[in-house]
Length: 380
Image (cartoon, rainbow, N blue to C red; front, top):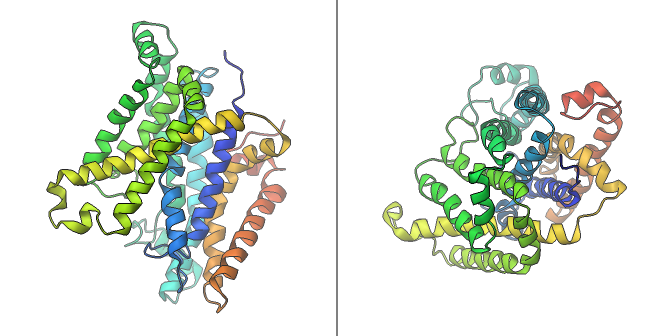
């Protein structure tokens, strides 16, 4: 069994979650995009930062999760793996949806002008009518049940990859060549490119067909590239190449966006234009290149352990569960002030981060009951 610790994977996981924190604080102030709590004055600069982060922070998390799943399956059979995944993923989702998500929707409704007590609102939350038309949702926790489903669906592939047969030998030969990475990416981007024009993003798990076709390939890539480590070595040795592709593709995308040249802006019948599918494919390709360059630079510079990484790697999951509720509740009061946008932003960044970290350190980390509820290992 492989007992090597891949510290750069832990580091990238932490970085992706910290990016998510920044992303959701910025969402209070970004121009054009809607969110639960919005400031009156908005920023186009923050919009562009968020557009860039949105292109790869979730794909990177799904890749890392697939990578870690392979490591887990090296020491767990499929039954133990399923139980472990359900305990760590679904129990926190169920519990914290009812405790931490409901307040977010309540403060959003308050900003919209409802005059209800929290108890009155919570009765409508329990009607299970899906947000935004209703008041029930799992909001930012959507990632966890998606990951659980992908983990369970990938069990057969995990078993196949652990064997040394003609199939794995063929894959090993295939991934010896750098061009194979781009062939894999081409195959991976096709489903979403054509499904995304027909299926909207819902985050409801059941009807999110296009997004499933996007995210699940990053989980599969995590499984494959752990098994065939020569790919990870390639990401490191060719990291500048992948960063170049990532940089050039985001420049091209933004050139089209900023000039109003996106297919959706030019043609009413954009769904019939081949340029639409090239543009969607380009956006998808951009996501893969940022993930690959992150892996390459991470493997080169972040593959080392320290006490801070050990602490953050343990804290990152509770941090993720807590972060958006803290941001929404505090932002509700902050946007009502007349202070400058920059001051509001700095205040939210510092105070929200401090509240989340102190909540974890004082009330979650020391207690096994709380660790269980937040999907953490017990203290022995």
